Length: 478
Ligand SMILES: *[C@@H]1O[C@H](CO)[C@@H](O)[C@H](O)[C@H]1NC(C)=O
Ligand SMILES: *[C@@H]1O[C@H](CO)[C@@H](O)[C@H](O)[C@H]1NC(C)=O
Ligand SMILES: *[C@@H]1O[C@H](CO)[C@@H](O)[C@H](O)[C@H]1NC(C)=O
Ligand SMILES: *[C@@H]1O[C@H](CO)[C@@H](O)[C@H](O)[C@H]1NC(C)=O
Ligand SMILES: *[C@@H]1O[C@H](CO)[C@@H](O)[C@H](O)[C@H]1NC(C)=O
Ligand SMILES: *[C@@H]1O[C@H](CO)[C@@H](O)[C@H](O)[C@H]1NC(C)=O
Image (cartoon, rainbow, N blue to C red):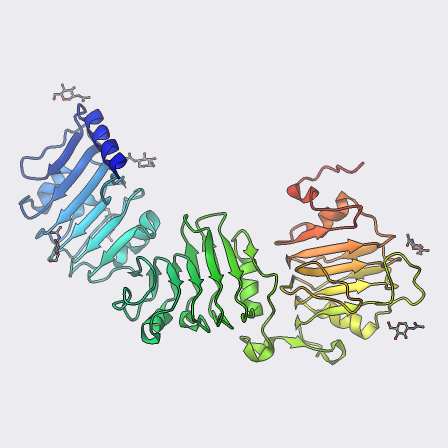
């Protein structure tokens, strides 16, 4: 803080000699900004002592496009402030907000349609006749969560500052649709009546962090359909160590974004928590960098998931023709076979089973194919495949965490293709398939255009180092 004050004083004195610099300036009829000053520097206040009419302000500000500093409009009798229409930038200063509009009882109109830049906070409070609706998108673009806006006729959303914690949130409003700020619950959640005031929220501009809580569900966010976190969000969703949490119930959530390109999602040590397949799809489809901490997770059973009728599960032979979304592991294996011994009894995949596997578009589970007689294999319809569990197959071989597809010891296999695969969360591996050509082209083919995937190959050939640059088209194999 002292450093900031020092910097600010230094900054003022440095520019003092400039004709456009006004230090702390109370605007009155005597105020005059030289015509060459498209940028004025200082902290400018219009208040009850200014005695300025709207027209006089228009004249005073007619050449001003940028305020390097602060603009305050406090306790005035103005009904509108058209003088702000042309202002493009209000930088703010280290000690104060950028734009502050307080206690203007008659103000009913604000036009900041040219404003495109501010590094600081906007504060618009206690202007009981001011409806900001037409300015919401500009306020959102310029300030995002750097805002303190309340008690106007329309506020463009409600806000949360600090943790969502009792008793600090006892006045959190009802009927909040657009929420600016982070939902942070650390420890016990507030009483249910207060917690469920969040259930009207559709859009959250901020992150969610739920840590060591007593919550059993996040169903109080049942209407949330979009989250966009700010630049400071290392995690956009971080659910950590909630021992009672058994389901998320974020049933409307469709879009998850962040202004921070390195923002992640983490679900960690929630021992009772199962994942709804749709939720996993939503996060895998998002632009967030990665999903962490799924190692010991599982998909929710049919009785606990959203839209259960859109999936099928169980024995492949019992799956109906029209089912395209399968939950379960698909294992074709000869568990007597080791990786190095001769195989006397190859695994055979029946045509019925093969037809079923090929009809699926989305699979929540692992496909493990081992010791088969297959010469070629294709899944023409598969678009997405997800796994969150570590599975152990019949041969007691533990597959790597999040293995979605593994081919092992298929001696005759020469050709594999997943032409429509878009998302694979996350590991596809190939081991000891003697006739399969392993090279960079193959790696590229397996990972090309597939989101979230890691392709690992044989012990002798691993795509991963190569995957650092999947966009390269030159053939680097020798
Ligand atoms: C500042 O104002 C003075 C007096 O009006 C004028 O002579 C000078 O040219 C101005 N400086 C600049 C940079 O415009
Ligand atoms: C406003 O700020 C932007 C970005 O810093 C800059 O490009 C633009 O020139 C500024 N506008 C004025 C009028 O100074
Ligand atoms: C605005 O009004 C509130 C409540 O009356 C008061 O506490 C605050 O000091 C006023 N702000 C300014 C800048 O006058
Ligand atoms: C704001 O002012 C601009 C420029 O005069 C005008 O085009 C625009 O319609 C105004 N917007 C509102 C919401 O009044
Ligand atoms: C061959 O494998 C199948 C299925 O893995 C098994 O049911 C069968 O008994 C095996 N036959 C021999 C001769 O090992
Ligand atoms: C490759 O396939 C042929 C049959 O097509 C088989 O005889 C041969 O053993 C296979 N090679 C390896 C290394 O498994």
